[in-house]
Image (cartoon, rainbow, N blue to C red; front, side):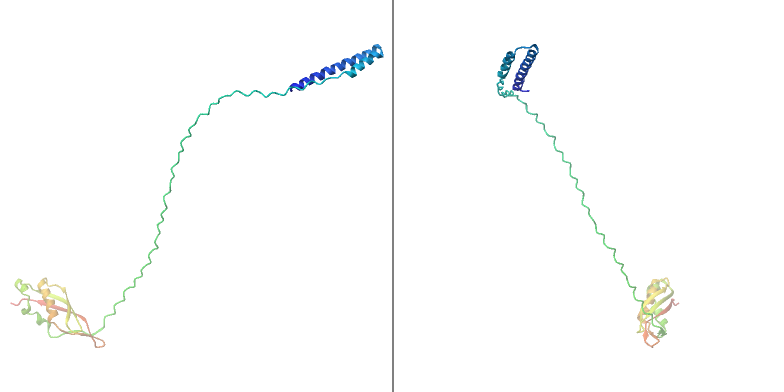
Length: 216
């Protein structure tokens, strides 16, 4: 409560107490038979009694300013270092294209050779082939070594009747006699070529046996 309110309340209490005393005195006067004048005087006094209002309280003085208090600045806290986690870069995914499987290469089989012409007439030697393998044609190295033996050769006879190829199928055991047999057959032996069913000359194969023997 303000100071003015307290002062005004005290004045009101005093006035109320005075009024109460007067009322008690008047009541007592009526009871005891006091004269009317006394009552009138009291009434005049009561009517002229004026309660002065207390003077207004002085204005509230502003509180004194607080003393200057020096506040220490807060301590400087060094922030912790920022730790950056290493950035892990995922290795690039290398996709190797898978080549399509190679197409199977279909190799056509070679055409079958035509069947050999049918021989209607075999080749025939001109003369006696043995006359070309006489003592006069004996290989000198085999003669000096005394080599003898039987040679079987497979001859290929062309359409002109000449021996184009010679292959020793049975050896005499002497290389000189085997070689001499094919050499003489290709150079000196002649045949009438074989013929097909149309009478045309064709190539054919013929066996030639030769016995080499030294004459005593």
